[in-house]
Length: 196
Ligand code: ZN
Image 1: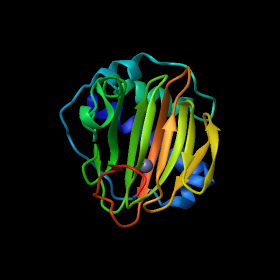
Image 2: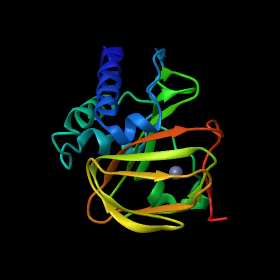
Image 3: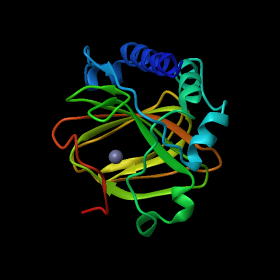
Image 4: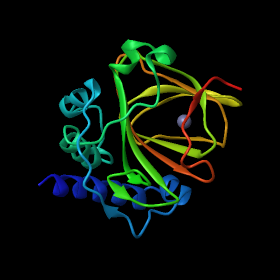
């Protein structure tokens, strides 16, 4: 039963990537990803994702619905500590790895995360070695990266970060649900706070 929910989420993400040139050209979807039976790890944000059914568009609705359906059985994680981002941030943020080395579907050389931030949240400046592509599934936020003009992004929009390009994100009155793709070297690394 749980496996069927994850397979639906995988298929919705794969279909969306194939139909969206900005995603498809960033990195080819892995052809050999295999389902891994991971225990659920729930966070306060898990319930927020399961309950938040609006903010999407016809292009993103299928993936949004599929993410809602796995939100209470997914292996949610956080990479930051309370000292770095504060308790309020940790209560309103989380991600799970849909595809990747530690994902619900195992693949090497590629990572696809589903990540969520609640309304009124500031995600401080951070950076990482892997190249990154954000795709907004639902809601929106203000994205800013060093050397790039700030942009307000909504469902269907993408934002790309180069290797070690510092970036930050701020939500307003709506949460944001995203599909985040990583490629390149540093794939197993984690983001670090700061802009240098
Ligand atoms: Zn990033």
